[in-house]
Image (cartoon, rainbow, N blue to C red):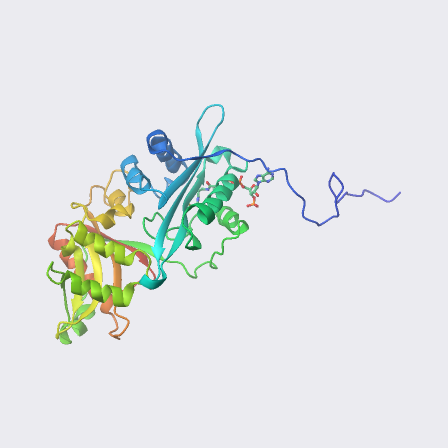
Length: 351
Ligand SMILES: CC(C)(COP(=O)(O)OP(=O)(O)OC[C@H]1O[C@@H](n2cnc3c(N)ncnc32)[C@H](O)[C@@H]1OP(=O)(O)O)[C@@H](O)C(=O)NCCC(=O)NCCS
């Protein structure tokens, strides 16, 4: 007599529209163990992310197998078959000025086997990681971030993962910038065809600025420049100090004015040597392997330029770009055939 009526509540009885507690399945989360889990984690990576970011065991081992609690990772496995179903990587890094050091914790990577998604594995790993970051890393932890700084797979959430998976992270409370805003890029350039644009270098040449490698004798002075200008970037000072500790001072490129003042610096590393920064960024090494997508040059000698920093006191448009070109020239002299530049914020340059 009233036609067909649809019930809007659920059993047990609840008020329509109100939040209902779901019966979430909790999965046992265990610590990642390099000896046991490395190869299954590579397989899981290849299945989840390998189409865009191919990975190999050596590179993943370099990235993951590090001292705790600065690197700690977690897994969920199938209780019956022991198959690895999910993995989460975390890093922690020190930040802030000397008198106010604090820690930033990172959820650097989270992935679940495609055939076992939507079963609560991601949630179990995520909850465990967040609890670990808050209580297990360091009492001075002030901030948690999605993506990491050093070591780094991704500086945030990759923009080309499906929207549904981006939403998954939003639902967990992460604030993601609107599409096209607040994003950065890793860029790659084939040096066989790259020529330093004359227009980029001319103003610096006219002003008497030179771009050259740092010498061992001046390293401490350059570090004073780094500390005064660039301490605010987490991991920056440590990355530079590591150059001295491992005998790679010559990889530090500097911009110097005609009076000998330091204006800017950058680290230029080549794959043939063992620069410690190359152990914090997996992609240059992988681009030069058989795993790399076909549009990149397999077997390339891929170097990189990172930590490009300009003094806050000077205003010389294009100085960072000039230093980047100077660093690329140096890499070419060292036999590097292509170059990777990470965490680039500026718009693509017309050259
Ligand atoms: C993002 C990712 C980790 C999610 O893993 P997952 O195991 O499928 O996630 P869950 O099963 O815990 O959650 C999936 C959804 O099911 C819901 N859910 C989980 N258990 C549930 C249950 N028992 N009842 C009802 N809903 C449930 C969750 O709330 C979630 O929905 P929501 O986002 O709308 O809230 C996974 O999609 C993945 O591996 N993506 C590829 C890797 C990647 O891109 N990672 C990011 C860069 S490193």
